[in-house]
Length: 246
Ligand code: NAP
Image (cartoon, rainbow, N blue to C red; front, side):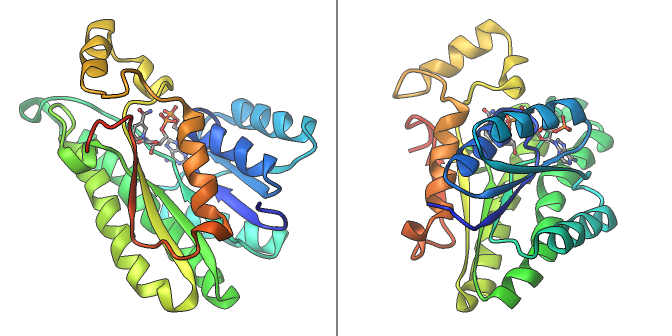
């Protein structure tokens, strides 16, 4: 489905990003695995893809750093010639109640989740405009739609991703570049592993389909949005959440 395409996936060393990288490679894309600190894990994802006969390359970049992101995207274009798909998946949480939330924890989450998404789009869009086409997929969250107590920073960042998605979708539509967001609910990854058993049991009660999702559930939506089949979909927020935020 994605033969000949170059796909950049930020934060692909584990969790949802890893699943998206594996799925896009399986569908024929050349995958650019970005990570910030987990070099060995990013290389393990690359190895997994190569062993299955796919194409994958690893690039370190902290996407919250504007200049470093420009260099990263320039390097990818220099070495692979094009970028057809960008998945802004890199994200962090620094949960805490408002009254105890530090400025540092607010800024760190906004810098990675929202500004990081702006940074990659800023530089990848230049290339996609030249190519007169492309797919941008941003990871938002149900928390960005409904809000979540203890996640003022994270909810703000993910609501911001939705606004960014829609604004950029309008700006780039005339060049056949689609921009969409995926809003996952609770997905089984290291991000949600840190939640206590009691919190998880309470969370499951809010999910009509009665279980946490798997990273592959998000990857399936990402592959579809990246494919030709989704050519007429832009500016949308696709909820993959077991019915949580309907
Ligand atoms: P995860 O397991 O914690 O993985 C996060 C990934 O992001 C890692 O590969 C990490 O790489 C990378 N990353 C973090 N900061 C980065 C930075 N500054 N620059 C580049 N890469 C960075 O998270 P996940 O659960 O897979 O979540 C993936 C995305 O889905 C996030 O945007 C998250 O907010 C969103 N989401 C997740 C859920 C869920 O239930 N899991 C729900 C809704 C939305 P390093 O280790 O190398 O830093």
